[in-house]
Length: 182
Image (tube, rainbow, N blue to C red; front, side, top):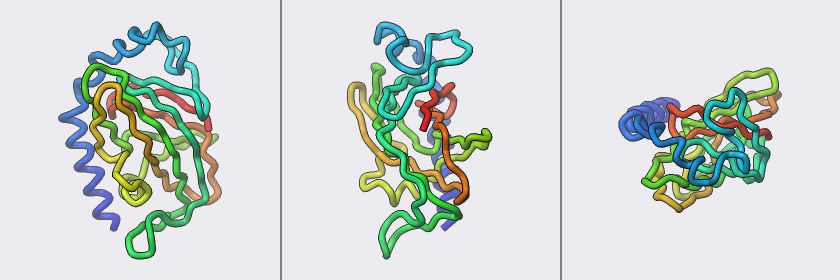
């Protein structure tokens, strides 16, 4: 199963390189269209420390506006009895709404998202587990057209004794990202 997950991550990286490489060129367009970044997390261009959003608050990075709906940790397995994946430690399931605020389609890739513990340890998303946690693969290489939005689950496999304190959400693997406190 780990070979499948590794292959999926490698395929994701190759596709994202081809599709997302130019996505940061117009990243400032979205904050200008919304009348500045004061209403959402992310800050204005040139800010050293952008504002950190909270669960339920919209946060923008590039062409996407993210709203974290909920976070549930301590999950041992995702999927069903026939098809599923067990956590190495515990799964944290983060439900997030992603809206395309740009003027062209943008690919959302759950594997570009990161989570952090209080001590600063970084955890990557588990794309293989996310396939089982989402009914329609909402977080796996999903093209979102302008004005459209999807809600899906991003999955992190973390040690049982760890508590996540923040997320770093990205519109592509090359974007600066925006922080959301958990």
